[in-house]
Every structure is written in structure tokens, then in C-alpha cells.
Image (cartoon, rainbow, N blue to C red; front, side):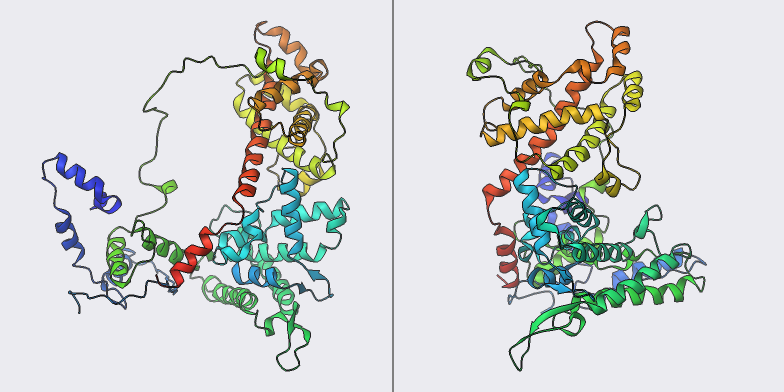
Length: 536
């Protein structure tokens, strides 16, 4: 049943290979027919719940009943056997105002995305065109949550601190993003090991969480929005919870009030030790609906009959999960097929004669002024440099090199300080000197439209090595270099690794940005939803 469930074609092949010794697909379908897929409460599901209660012995089990709807194709068929989104959408259309009259503007997030896209860097957040073009992803909770997140707030806060002219009035927007993010974290707590507001609601965290609830309810209740009066036609400013855009904000307030009541009823009375709010969210239903849509193969808009058939199968295979949590995972690095290449693998610092001849002159980064190198980009370079160092430390095998790299002086970064919760790494000053040369060269290649040239990756590495004064970098490695084999220069290898990892990260991000620009406005998602809700 499991093989036939995941792939009917695979089951047919296996059955034919074993000379039809396995049951036919029609026989398996007859097994499913014993389960009723009629509207209403499924008796088999109730029976499963009854067995769980009996197996718990003296333990008390608490359940949660959630409801949602799923659009299915409007079609008349003959059945022979029976005869974090409303808030984002509101702010995307209209400016909000806090109790002090300060504007909360979605335009600041648009400007942040544009600044990052044009400069080919990002300030440690997820913003891209999908988040800005929110109307094409109205139902995506993931995109809405990433838009109003702590990462977005920290990026705006850094630009405000730096005095960026386009972000001088974004303080109210920063507070709004943080408030929505913190409330969302509390309402989606999933683990006892989480940090901050992602911790479960229990006696140790109740005081802090309820203080947040009181502040958030007061904050959301005083937000205002400009709407057009139906009687006079004028633009008036009224409380958002009293306007036609109240759904998302009232939903937040109701969720916080209900969670507080559940804590008083179940935790204080001793029935539960803590509450993981994610357990009672609608995400589980949305995941189930996603399974229904994937059951039809190319048809993601089932009719009533197809929906009932999918429901029966899923009821028998409730262990179906995403590939990351599959029953079978790879336990070793066994390769299926290895193909040997006859081509010589070039070293990072090698450039063939043809490449050398095509270069008009060697690039010197100090001779070229760059307008795009600014304080904002400096934050991004330092942040990525810390990530690069972590990758390098995981790559190098020499324990002495790890110790010497950790002993190098750290670079200062107020952005990493603001962003870190104790887990981010501050890069070494010499590492930043290397990555800065790479960043400048990448921008030179972009400005001169050389980034698309053949072997641009190797050329940038060659130019980086030419512009570096290796003797002035990582001086504490000098004695260690003398102790190892003359062929193995660990200092040289360390610098090459830093260049390679940083350039690989930068080129990957540039490729993603160029792809999004080339694709233009995405219509796939919006047209797909249009088809589904049209019932076609």
C-alpha cells in the first residue's frame, strides 16, 4: 500500500517484475473503499482517537479542534457508490499611524529591498521581490512572516543609525515590525529549547509574555488608518480595529487573549506544564490541504470525488511528511556513479595564457574610486565575512591554524552586535581586508560589465591575490608556516579559502538577483490561484 501510495507507476513496475505476485491496484483500491469519505466526522478518525485515549491509561489527553475550508473544483459528477497575512495586506495598501501620529510605511521595506538588490548585497534579511509584490502571495504566511521580522527591523534600524537619507523616518515602522514579529513568535512556539519569545508559555515565561501581550494589545488598539468616509467621501483617520481592515489586528488581539485564558485554565490549574501554541494553530490543516492537492499529480484542483479518494488514502498513510523528515535518510556518503574527468583542474591562482593576453592591464583596486562602496555595504561585508570564517574553520584540518585564526584581533561591527544573540561570529580584521578586496573587484567587474566573461571567477581570484600584501596579513602564522612542509603554506591556503568562500557566496547572490530581474513580474502564482478559485 505504501509503494502504491507514493508512486502507482513504481508499484506497477515492481508487480510486473515479480510476475504479478503482488496485489493488483484495483485490489488495493478495494481496501480503501472500506473507509467512508463522506462529509461529516469520519468514524475511523474518531476510532483512532478512542484508541489513543485507551492507550494513555491514567494520563489525561487534551485535544484541539480546528476548522478551515479548502476550495475544490465546482463540478457535477456521478458517484455510483453513494448516489501573519491580513496585517501585511493592510499595510501594503495603506499607511498606518501609531498613537503618536508617526507613519508606519511599507515603502521603507520596498526601499530596503531595492537598496539591497541594486547593490548586490543584503543586510541579513529575507526581503526580495516576492515580499514586495505581496499581492501575488496573499495566502503565503511564510512570506508575510519574513516581511515583518526582526531581521527586517534590524536592517532598517542600522540604516536609521547610519543616517541614510531615505530611512530617516522609519522608527515607527521598525517598532511595528518588532511588535508583529514578537507576537507571532509567541503564537507559534514549538520547542522547549527555543529562545526569546519562541519559548513555550509556562510559569517561568508567563510574566514576560503577558507583559508583551498587554503592550501589543494596547499598541494594536491605538493604530489608525486613513479611510474614505462612505457618507461624505472625505479621507478620515480612524482606529484600524474599527475599520474594514480590522481582521488581522483583531485576530492578533483575540489570539493573545485566548492563549492567556488557556494558560489560566490548564497550566495554573495543574493540567499542563506548558503550552506550545503551534500545536493548536491552523498550520496542520494547511499542510493537509497541500497533501490533498499533490495527490492529483498534475491536477492540483480536485473535485469532490477526487477529494474523497485522496482523503481515504491520506487517512491510511498519516505518516506522510516532507522529504526532510522522511522515514529513510542517507546514512553515509556512498556515491551511485563516479565519472572521471580528463580535464586538468585549474588552481585558483592560475590564469591561462589566453586569459592573460585578453586583459588590457592588471586591475588595482586602489586606483579606481567606487561609488557603491559605502558604510551600508561595509555592514554586509563584515556580516558575510563572519559567515565565511565559520565555513573556513569547518574546512581546515590543522588545529594550530584554527587556534592562530581565533587569536587574531576581531573587527568591530555594531550591525553584528545588534543582529547577534550570542551565536554570530565577529570576523578577524585580516579576513575583512581580504574580503574587502574581493568585494571591490566584484563591483569593478559589475560596473565594467565583465562579470559575464568566461572565467570571470578565476580572474577575480587572480586579481585579488595580486592586490593583496600577503606578508602583512595573518602575521601570527609566520612561525607556523616555517614548521610545516615547504610545499604546504597554510597561510597561503587560508587566504585562498577565504577568497573562494566569499566570492562563491557573492556570485551566488548576484546570480539570484540577476535571475529575478530577468524573470520580471511573476505571474505563475497569481494565475494558479485565479484558476483554483475560479473552479476550473
